[in-house]
Each structure stands twice: as structure tokens, then as C-alpha cells.
Length: 383
Image (cartoon, rainbow, N blue to C red):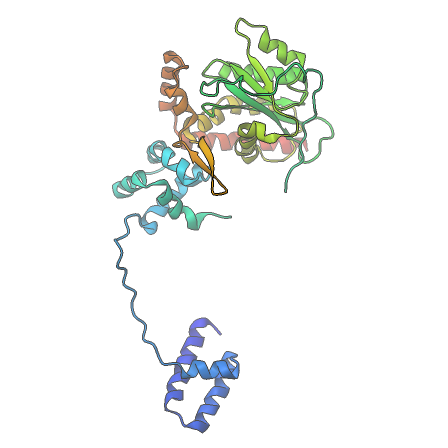
């Protein structure tokens, strides 16, 4: 019996119960127990309760400005294309993504456009709340002990306000088994701007890691000042150390404390958002996919994440009444932080701004998805 039917039956029994005599009331109670599954005392309370007329609810508050029924159908595809960004990131991304959506998909009504651009981060989170859907992995870092005494643990060496100080790490695309050879990803994130570069390599040899790092440096929009890694042997070796130090302006190399992943918190976070969410956990054991993955990483993938995906940076934190209170800066894209930096040359800023003006994030994401599908096909063909 549906809820509506139960209410109708109860309403009819209640009306008869009001006018019935003692004997008939007993029969009506028996019917309520049998039909509705009530306990005897519950049936007496239900049938004896007075009939309450439903009163229309009057909303005495201010009228709603951001109607979910109006805005959600337009916000949903943009939010999905941004990989489900939170409200604080999304409010910084919409000025770029809304014009791109109109150029790539369809025109948004003017009223909707104005409201989406004027919405706060909390408003966007409220609009998206109905759309949201709410084991650990083993570490594959193998310690490199050869140069650990020569490479300092990161401390006051870093000038954290300048771009060019990179945290780096490697991520295994091994499918849960480290047997044999497979593709590794080198992940590098700039501390000041959150600029991200990733590269694929076959195996985790020292020479392959060095080649990936050299390629990353060539694509950076600023000079490389420092490199901070975990204690893995792919980074702590003479190949990498000589490459960094045998130059006119040597690059600092530092390392994290052993077994302290929080020392590399920025790149550890990007391992999930910039590698696992895109390339997954499947095993990539076909060496032919390496160059395809690097073409993607140097092209549309790099442009999409650095030019159009905003990120939050921690400004300060303090302990108040036993709780850690974190204050974040306004969300910005890595490119926006690069364009604001006094350390980046004017020519580089102009080149990046012109390059971004020619791009559409929806077209970039479609191209990234197409290339990932080709890579997955080659990976599966190998299997």
C-alpha cells in the first residue's frame, strides 16, 4: 500500500470514528490494525486525532535570486567539464569557461549568464549540492642512499615566493603489480604558481628520469631554481645532480624527510588530480604509448590544466580553540599566477596570453579525451 493510499484510508476511518458509537469504534480500530499495521494503542491515537487542514506554506523571506531550476541545467555541463571543481575554484573559472561553452556548444540566456557570473562560491556549491555524489595504495618509492648525505633536506633554502621551485615525484602506471616493465609518470609542480608538468617514461631508470626532467625544464615559462624530491633513487643520483649543478647558475636540489609525504604535499596532491584522475590505475606495459602520452602532456593536456583549471593556495593557518583554521588565497589558474609574477619575462607573458586567447577549454578537453582513448586502445591491444 502506497503512502498516499494509507493517508486516504486513514482519513476515511477517522471521519467514521468521530461519529461512531462504542461498538462501531471497536470495529474501526480492528480495521486500522489489520489494514494499516498499527498497534492497538497507535490506532486509537491515529483515529482519535483531530483532522488538520493543510495550510499552504508562506515564504516570508526574500525572493530567491539564484533559482536551481533555472541555473542548474546550464551550470551542470560546465561543472562536469571542469572535472567537478569546488565552488571556490569554479567561481574563478567561470569567466573563461562560460564564453568557451557558448563558442563551443550553445548560447546561454543573458539572465542565466549574468547570474552565474555574479554567483558566489557558496551559491555555486548550493546549486551543485544535489548533483554531487559522495583503500589506500602502497608506496613504490625505493630509497636512494648514494647521495642522501650530500643532498640537504628542504628548509630555508627555498625562496617560496618566486616561481621556479619544483616538487617532483614519480607515479607508477602498473595496474597493481610491479613485476616487469611498465610506464612511469614524472610529476612536477611549481610551489609558487602551481604550474604542473608531467611526462611519461618507460621504466624508472636514472637516465630516463633525467630526460623527462630536462624536457620539463624546456617547457617551463620561468627559470628552474630548485628541485625537491622524495628519497627515491631515480632522483638521488649523479645523473640528476650533475645536470642541476654543472651550469652557470646551479639549481638547488633538496629532498624530503624519509617516510614524510607531507614534505611533498603539493606534488602528492597533483599525483591524484593530474595523473590518477586522467590516466587511472591500469597497467600501461606497451612502450609505444610513451611518446603518445608525452605528446598529450606537452600539448592539450598541459594547456587545459595550466590555462583553465583554477587552484587554491594556502595563505595561512593558525590554531584557534584546539582547531586548525586555514585561510586560502583567491582561486587562480597557474597561468594567472605566472602572468602576475615579476620573475617572468614580458615576452613570455605575451606569448602565453596570445596562446591562451586561441584556445577553448571544451575543445581541449575533447581532444584530451580522444587521445586518452587512443592510448587506452594501444594499452589494451598489448594486453
